[in-house]
Length: 445
Image (tube, rainbow, N blue to C red):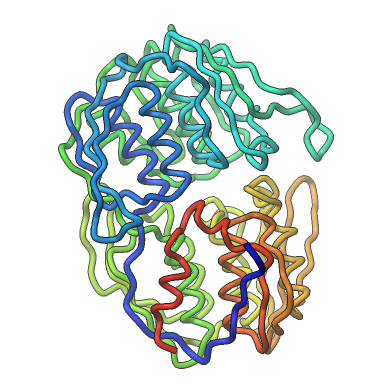
């Protein structure tokens, strides 16, 4: 695909509905597969990441009937649960593409299986460190073999492909050195198979989708402050049906777009309002955004309708304690920071270095080319991003770096900039948000 042209927009107006939240969707289909009974999952997003989880579970013997929703990018899945011990050894390796969530959560599930499985990843994910999840699973008794090599900081780490043989697990009491919802989730899923009670302690609370979904499926799980306890060797019971709320990370691009373009107004329907994921709303409100919650309901998780109107943003400091609740939204918040008055600071943002690409580099490089004033500093392993607001960004040629969130953030930046912006590759948005461009095109402007 050639470069993608983004033209400036005067304003945007419209009503949007978003594909199901992919973080929730991964966990819904995994727990449905491990439960007893049949589960219908509505509003399941047909993005690449979630489809890799679906394909992986099918290879493990799970029967899933796929039906279409009104939107071609959504599926209605009927999952026939196999129970915790009903998965079968696949005939060939499981390929997870670039989905880090699929890889890490499936490692937790496979740690409990008494057979060996090899997991293959695509190029970018094969460069992302896996020792942080392999270590606790090994402590529980899983045998895990991965590629050992030096990480960018000079330390030895492990990378895909990964071979895992599980079964006969023991519970652990594990204090996580780095806050990670995916690592926490892998341990909790493995904890379903372990003797006794597994305890996970977080340095900072991370998104709690796994805990909520496990509770929905009647797992023996309890939470207390930054500790989660799960009782092993029980069973999961299907709730019958689940509706996956709209993805708040996807909504975040349009929250920022409506906020920075004068005269804009967007109504967003059925968006996930999970408190551990709504950091972007809290940050934008603190910056002066006009975001109003019009309604609230509850399915697998809380959700509601949001109305966002344009506003004059101001710079703020985002403390490191809030970063885990909006790690995926920092790229688009960096765009917001460029249009805010004064200085915007993101503390403890180093986890952006180990996403699909180094997002600190990709976003800084692109935005600086457009006229932004950004600097990054490091101290004792912690990185800080400082953005001095500018009156206007200027269109130019930028790169997606093969990263979906970088690409979509640059579309928003280009729409609010003067002149034309060219993005070298836009196909990567299909990883998480295949109808992103069609929703952008649906807005009146």
